[in-house]
Image (cartoon, rainbow, N blue to C red):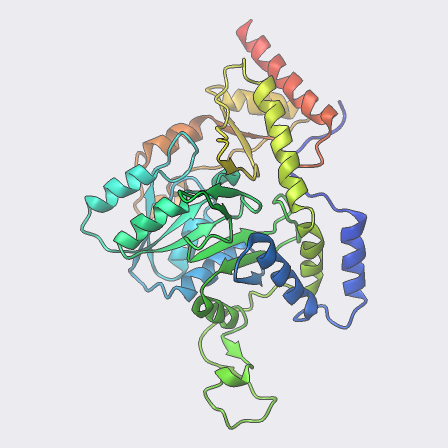
Length: 388
């Protein structure tokens, strides 16, 4: 098969292109109406009170730490299995990161272990950053109770999980990004994610105070809003830089693409779940640990992660057949930068066990039936050959 199958990829339609082109022909390429339109549409989609776009998911994490006023030396907890940015954002503000191990049931931060850690520690923590890894939504209702007990804020890194949801104890569906249990929820619009903007991010919240602060920090710490000015006597053109911010804005061009992509979010999640069901059925007899997808959640299936003791062999075999997989993730604290800061192997043994065997199979909505069948066929062939 000459066709190359990546682990993930964007799908750009004629409708996407048309909206981007119309924006290119408009008066605004940035700081214009498409940005606000995208933010409002996203907030409506996830049932959030406020949504603020930004340049990428990492910028969203950094803005979150600034808006929550994380101070140098303050401690923040996060999961050990995530992209480095989920932890790095704490360091940007001079904070201290502590890693909590994962559960092998869902590969999320282990809430039982978190409770034991907090109850047995005299340390004070400012907050916790949880990650909806692979698209599996964290039980934020339970986490909110834990966080409130210890005076912590919650940031939900949902870069893998737009379109996901969980059902709380009251029987209410809590869409990721719209739940009132998290203080801030963050999304990424990198091309391999559900919504592709080239680059881009979004922050949702129900708190007006955080939204106003995020809005200012995203654009150099400057406000032009008359009612927010400290000097109320100045003319209409006046603006003030009230604190140190950044240029973390998204352009109207990117927002146009995101706005069009957003209309396909539900179908994207639905197709990803269809592909997952095929994988689960066709790979069930093989010596693989397959993901757990409970009925009471909507899994966004950004990733379909399997585990095997022959991970590196399988990776190479699939690659030789034109199927490109990926490993998500190296435990953050094992990266050289964190090792130099004193974090050591063995810190999170379950995460390390997971890492030793994890492999993300191709998963994206435009995968054809032929693509899926080919991936399954080659995996079956691999295990037939190694067992001979």
